[in-house]
Amino acid sequence: MENKKVGIIGVGNVGSTLAYSLASKGICSSIVLKDIRENIVEAMALDISQAANAEKSHTMVKAAKSGEDLKDCEVIVITAGIPRKPGMSRDDLLLTNAKIMQAVLEDIKKYAPNSKIIIVSNPLDAMVYAALKILKFPREHVIGMAGILDSARMSHFICEKLGYGAGQIESSVMGGHGDAMVPLVNYSTVAGVSLPELLSKEDIEDIVTKTKNGGLQIVKLLETGSAYYAPAHATSLMVEAILYNNKKIYPCSVMLDGEYDCKNVVSGVPVMLGSNGIEKIIELKLNEEQKELFANSVASVQELIDTLDEKFFI
Image: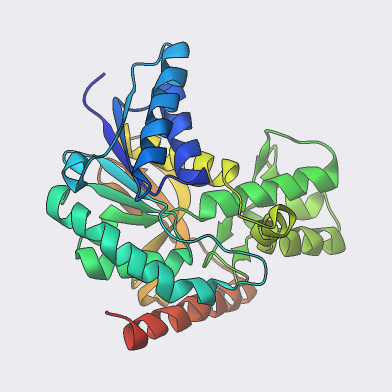
């Protein structure tokens, strides 16, 4: 395997699950884990390395001693930040996680200026915006993980409603990673059959509502954290597409520069992922209702961005 090095900054539930997934599948040649809890990260690196060896994987996993260990990473995933807790909105997370983001990006700027960055920290779209402004990287190199997760949640609720179709459901969600996300019913299918042909309007509305609240539902059930298996797997798909130049199309959070009539704002749209990060932004034909919903979603992200511009550092 050629040198395919991945860095993971923030090794909580999502970061550690991602590392385990990448290592057990042998997707990359090496993984470096970085977190302020050095003893825990060292233990995780050992544990995941041993799991990889049980799997006969060639992936090497180690704990970072300093930011310099991020050197030569092709992809760096950032999950650092406090998780959303019951009763906490995305806005509550904003300034705290922006400060954490600013701190972790300094090492990337210094030691891994050519890496592709995948942001998982919340509030997702605002953190992508902050990262772009701090790093001053090309927009193709800073990508948010949200749309794959939201689409997977929609697929789950479709399958739950139908009682069949597992593995044959293709769902599509656009917009910001929050309450104003836009599930695209007409772009969602089961074995190629359009969703409106299979379910009533009321059932589809229920699926859309559950999709928007999919993350919050897990937060409420867990009480002390948020989802991590599905977010980690969604992130691993993005890492793999970039490392292997797969040119796969996934919904991701990106800086828009005229696409969908939006500029200097981050939102989730379909993109082609490859070795350059974002290889292409796909512009779907939206109906008038979807255009309005997408505009509302973008506006909700813009409010967070305005707060960052006003109260933080940008």
